[in-house]
Amino acid sequence: MSPHKTYFNWSSGKDSALALHYLLRDADFNVAYLLTSVNAHYNRVSMHGVRTELLQRQLEAIGIAHGKIELPEQPSNDEYEELTGLCVSQLREQGFGYAAFGDIFLEDLRKYRETQLATVGIKTVFPLWKRNTKQLIAEFIESGFKAIVVCVNGTLLDKSFAGRIVDRGFINDLPTDIDPCGENGEFHTFCFDAPYYKQPIAYTVGETVCRSYAHGDIENNFWFCDLLPG
Image 1 (cartoon, one colour):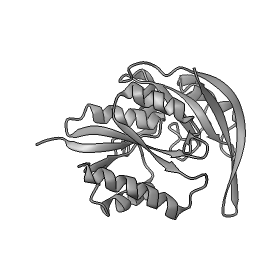
Image 2 (cartoon, rainbow, N blue to C red; image 1 turned 90 degrees about the vertical axis):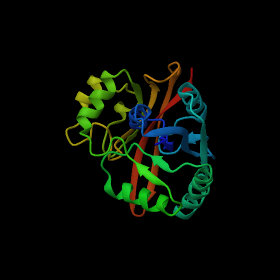
Image 3 (tube, one colour; image 1 turned 90 degrees about the horizontal axis):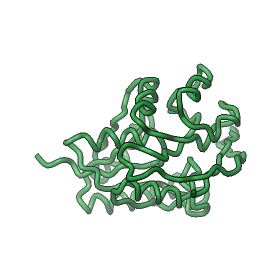
Image 4 (cartoon, one colour; image 1 turned 60 degrees about the vertical axis):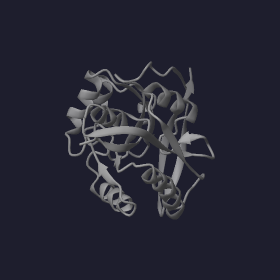
């Protein structure tokens, strides 16, 4: 039987990088497209804040066909679903039957993805699902992946964690109530090298800035470490 034609939801971070690593070695799947949501107003990867120029270099280093979902500055849920649905429908017409994600244990998020994609006849695959996050981050480091922290939730982590390399020292310094993979949104990363990259992604570290985001009555501060193309 032919492998399943699959597109991968690429975030530019470490979980995406490791999940893609698994799928590239799985004969049941043919990852033929990488899809990334970006903020078109700021030209940055959604949530992570990575410049699209660095994202582009990353995608070229991987060497798989790719595309972007360009979102407005502050998209509503309806706008997000409309733009995402249009792109996914086009991929379905091109023969893609599976969508892959780097999620690990967020049940509600998985259910949401499955429900949305089922409406256009696309199944889902989660290569890292229910894996122990301490083991995953250790595997990430030991396998030669390299990542830098580009965003931290300021209500959960100190500003000093932004801009740090993900290594054993970083993991050891995390508070005990923080997931080592940041699966609860504690931090986000940019993976600048991986075993399947053609070359590492060169960058320089810029300034770290604070941004506030309100969700209902709750306001959270996030520290973003800006990376400049090297």
